[in-house]
Length: 134
Length: 183
Image (cartoon, rainbow over all chains, first blue to last red):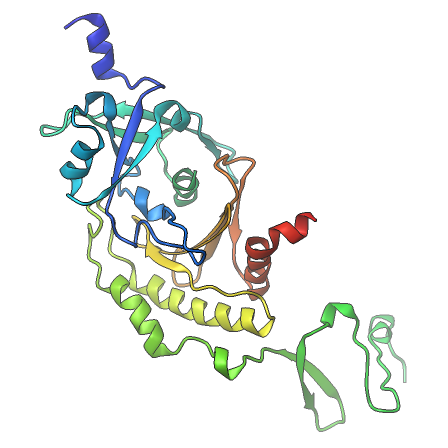
């Protein structure tokens, strides 16, 4: 493997697009009172506070690959890694600053899998709520 | 009889028709008059809800929350806990109370999008144009809010705790009348 290829595999570049699969269900993608489709914060629920995404650069089949891997018929949201990394949140009482990053987390059945996580890890409900809202 | 200065400032005199003026901050509010045995009259703020806009009945609430109560751990395939029963119960109470309160004050009410986060806390979400209001029922006695009008966490989001009905009324005003507040 070349150095460039190794870096591509082990590092998510800022310009990379990330796919987040979301069930095509009104719980996650509700319609507001004005008839507009919205994204509920539930779309980024994650028990470990590390929402999963797929790196499009490693998804030969594009969004359909992500969709079908999660659940046929589900929706796919796209994010830009650099924009995700621009997020930060400050804890109101401790003043601690939380950055946001993305890293590859290879799975046996999904080499495109990556996770959005906090630096330091998101350890409070409020901080993770803000990140999900952003 | 000696009357203290603080009490004197609150002294109101009824006119010939028995009317008293309370000041603009009480405009539009309703009061029950409780007459004590010693002749004292006490004004108690009350909420009056039109019958046609009656708060959600328990049957309707049951229907809204039924889907939530049926969820089990990992209901979203992302490891989320099942919604906590105490959060569901508190959310149910809160919605009925908030709806009644907004209607009584002629503040706009829309049914929230009811959901749950990864910790089993109940979420109530509202959207209006570019604004989002989310209430988090974190336990049987704590409700937090997060309002956002953009994706910048520092400059376009604000969070806090909802402790009184007045807190929610202020949030509703922000959600539905932000344009008026700017103008």
